[in-house]
Length: 364
Image (cartoon, rainbow, N blue to C red; front, side, top):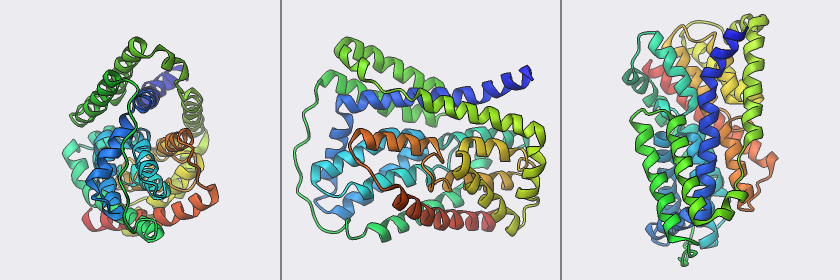
């Protein structure tokens, strides 16, 4: 049992380290004024047209998710969208939901895009597949999921996205030095993730750099930092519960639920089970449980990733990105009705997930 727990800790420890460290990075960057300035630049590029501004924000969200991971997008980009809305006097809801949904649905393409992908990459390698094989298999489902998400967002919020806006001056940063250091760190972590360095190490190093900078420039800020220790502990507990349950009969139950094979219906079934599991218990433990009964074929693993990456848009605990997003929204005073969020999230998950699984069926 101790060996099993040690193996589990070695596997999920880096995930939770990344989660906590990237939150610290976002907190400091937000305080330094990085997101207000980034929001102002984005607004200028939109040429006073709300739809153009939103489309630019969509591109930014997709690129940020693919290269930096969904959790980074939820933490770093959510304040940008909310800052844009506040500066221009437009509704923050389309920008908030764009960040939330694309943080999840655009997280298929690269292993670093989602921590579930990083967990799955090890299984791909065990099946004789390379990093390139993963990307080739994920490309079509990833593109389909993004297209579906953008369509749903536009249909739901096209009225808010019409018209023009007047550009306002950005807020003055509290400390120019801290602003520049924070911006440089945020820009640096993307390429470091993209070249394959450990997200846990990169995010931890970034957090240390910014903590040192804050200690010198604004010591009082250290006392205001909000670190999500409770979320991290909660996810760790879920992983332990799932691991124990797998050893006490859950594996056979999941095998019956997830089925077998790589036919069209079988892949749709795996994706649907993954999406439901993610919304019930969170996508990371859902992936950990279902990986045990889908790791026999790369296509089944990819179908599971579609489910646990694209599907968790209904419940507020379905992914760490959703929890981080909600935290960023609360910090900016933006609240969205939970019932409305669940209904609209379900619509997006069904369309985007369905398109992604359909694309996987076509290219497998």
